[in-house]
Length: 225
Length: 239
Image (cartoon, rainbow over all chains, first blue to last red; front, side, top):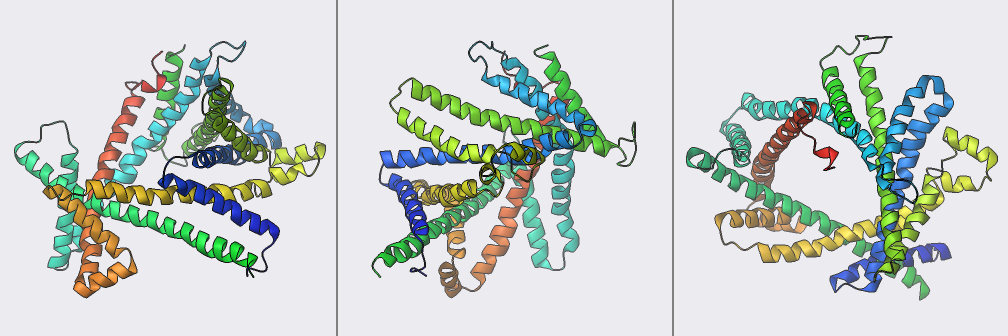
């Protein structure tokens, strides 16, 4: 495998190893090499999304329909105008005066449509099904174990909701239920933390595997063969 | 004009989209246009406006870094690095692909090699993403493993009942998620891994996630209602 590597593949492996090691160097302390690669990363990521949005939105959803059948799609000029208005955020530039207030029009449509969709989607798609599922578990109870699980979930959901209810002081019964809520939340956060750590560790193993197998074993190894 | 028009736009768009849900999907309102058609059209509009928003963000990054470079700030060379790498990735990326209608017209006038840059499966963009951006992204997240571990070392002290619960749950899940840890847990008692899966993950964790989802959804719905009623105007800014 190592002998079949081309010069281009070698250079690519060395470049990947360089950026990986440069980013890991921050674990020791902040340094110019890390900063250089960090800024390359920021620039590349921003550039990638600029290209992605142009290809998947501006060309495909705006320019192509307007070009192929303008009569049927002339309404797309409206979001185009609002989109251009968003760019007025960049004013004042040179002789162009401050027109940034115009960006609010496009923003208002985005905020309004998100609100319109969210109002229904959140209630119909999340609150109702999640609430129904919480109680529906009791209809599937066959033994004590399944009853205990359904009760555990019900207590967890209610106590979590009570803990996040801040319109009334957490005293008396409300305070007691909120206390149970904290215990549930702590266990859940601990579990989520454990999951996140293991996710990051698996990424770390992936990078180490690249450095040891592909770079050292592959590229560097082939230099000594 | 500066404040009233945006409020009218937000309230009317929100009301239409909320109302469309309650109307019959096949009911033709006018000129054969159904509520679903209106909803789809508005969603396309929002996607297009969102696209311009992202372009605004990228231009803003360029503007900030150009300013930093021209003002000769101490870290100006790093700003230059950001600008160059952004342009190296963005210029090939924003060229319309030969498969788009705009691209087909463009490449009748421009040399064909530009098509290599413009294609959505373009060599340069994909190469930069696969061999620079993706490895850097996973390395960045991998470094977080060390910081999470060091933060945990400092924060996870079993001082109170709550902290102990957090610590025990995290340790159990970390053990359970790796084969060796699961084997150790199995040696202690074969029921522990199943207990973690059933009680901890599908019981306590799922119920809390559900509670948080319901709470957040209720919050989002009430915020949406405030926007529809024109009470919430924070998106207009201060001026």
